[in-house]
Image 1 (tube, rainbow, N blue to C red):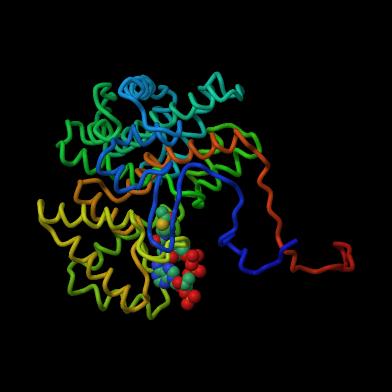
Image 2 (cartoon, helix red, strand yellow):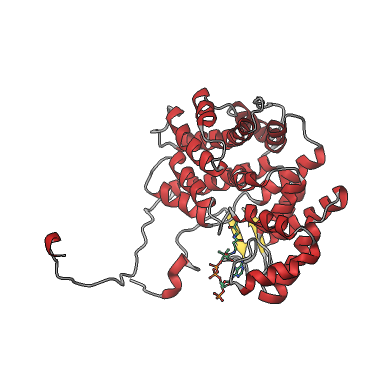
Length: 374
Ligand code: ACO
């Protein structure tokens, strides 16, 4: 057994083969099924990208229409789930509620025990379609607002913004939000995807795998970083405060959220796209969030040679789209459900139980002392 200390955190350990996402960490490139991320964000809708991840090729017009129709038909959630959301404490975390709701949803799937690829694909479509509804309902219930029914004429991005705000979204906001969903769709064996694959590798069901993934995404070292970035931007308030704030944190050995990455040794290409969006939104709608962010980026580069990751500019972009910060990580799940499902569908096709080992460093042999003598 390898006891190489570098395998702590599974750094650079290859555990499977995948046709989905290629990350070139040294040159900062990312592609899904061979298509560069910037090409996809410029030319595709989120639905086209999901289809690509789930089927390996971009859809024809007919295929896309059928795929969208299936998503639209599955957006409603059972009344029992709405009751559960209503009964949850209003102050509970949206990620906790989402994780619980996804787990509960499995009780309503009569095909749960069907292990065919069709049934698993159907479960993926149901989760993809229902997660936005769960989030919008939970947000509106939290604010004692009337629930907005899903609109079958709208795509995922527009429907999400519509159900959240209760009015049809501005086209430019919808397009930016759609690009954000594409950017976050898949990212190799990141922690939450790995968690989903581990669960699927036991031949557990799709709902269980996604429940594992949501619990993992929540952590501040992973998807939870975007909300933490916004808290930091709010504390800094203006660009000229950034220097003292960041230097103070670094002196205390605190981590600056939204910086660093296990795989990218140069800038995360998703951060580049989000940075441009943040700049554009600030120039269109005002504020200083982009300016503060740029200031932090420069300081982190100078002090630590660390570059921003996807979570850094997502914070200012979502805020300028009028999305509250406690929804940032849940929105990551609205997008990443596409990658999680693609990855577990791939896992099921060529499965082997994922079961690594630990290097035991505890006592080798101890003399047992009975309870009364300890
Ligand atoms: N701020 C300050 N120092 C940092 C940061 C940071 N954000 N990231 C890494 N470092 C430093 C560490 O302190 C460590 O320094 P040391 O060697 O002097 O102790 C060194 O860089 C290496 O850090 P590791 O934690 O070993 O690197 P790892 O590859 O495990 O880190 C991670 C990756 C967890 C993302 C890290 O960069 C981090 O904590 N970033 C902040 C949280 C964050 O933004 N997470 C989102 C990642 S993207 C995503 O999941 C969607």
